[in-house]
Amino acid sequence: MGPKEGTVREKVEEVLREIRPLLQADGGDVELINVTEDGTVRVHLRGVCSTCPGSMMTLRQGVERLVKEQVPEVREVIAV
Image (cartoon, rainbow, N blue to C red):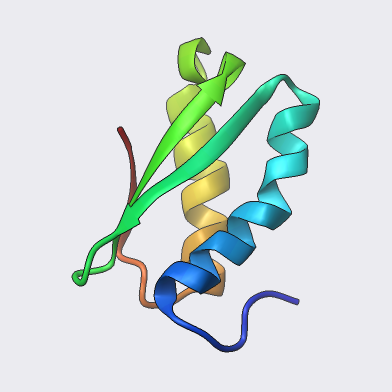
């Protein structure tokens, strides 16, 4: 399971596609903004995820953890 080939951006997009249904089930979503050369991924949390008090936990414990597990080139995930 998880991305095997492609650019870092493509790999991150694939992981986000896997995560997205879980977020959407709770009324939220995540949009990839960019991936920098140093391995920083910028995402925009949408829907209820943008205003939820637990959004940073969702970002760190969910999105960032899964992205970093499946795409080792990623150093951090930041919500913008």
